[in-house]
Length: 322
Figure 1: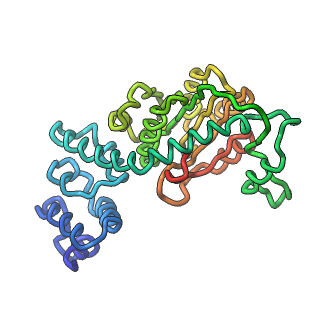
Figure 2: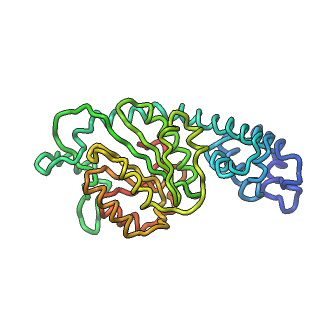
Figure 3: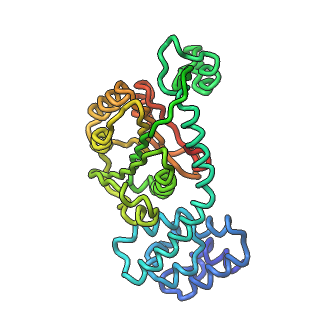
């Protein structure tokens, strides 16, 4: 155990795990024997960051030895363009293991949440002023209380009405810049799960400075993930423009933008487009991150401006989505 820790955290004085050392797979096996899975994953991430082990992920033997998690998947996706074919085959197996595990964990809660939301939907969809259930609306929006104004912002309004059975449209618009890697992984899985629900029509769009529609790949989340290209610039306005073109019935559409909001395009155009989507009746939400980590880094100024337009902006862990 001491040797395993020293190899990672005292590598300046010892041989360490550099690329010239042949003992990396053995070290990975050792830490799995000595430590619980959660600790193993932390140590692997530390090794990637401290010892430049990313280049070793190009070796199939290395991939077979690691404990897979979301962060490893993100690393593999980022490196997929330079992987030899043999390594890419191994990488797909590793990614499939992580995806299958996440689907088992998230599929049933996601289906229950979506179906529950659809059953309650008629009470949530933009009721007229005279139809608002004020008691329920206030209770649901207490988390949006603004102390400086001594008021509750009714981000979500509840009303009375008859239940309807209609197909709903959900568009997941995902920023694939490097900082959003874990969010891309989770979004692909949620998109695949939601696409399997008959009463929901799901589209999945990824973007950097260009836009790619991956809806046709949603039957296989692994293919979705390997179709992404992590890194690059960010043009949120362009992506929203594409999504806007997909919307046939605004009041029956939920648009989820998953981005840290660091816009590389024209900010004014982004805000104008957001305002037009809200005005048309689209339920527009901005998720600043969809990952297990804590508070994300994001453009607070743009997030505040979107919130002022009626676009709630917040981070979310996978267990709380959708």
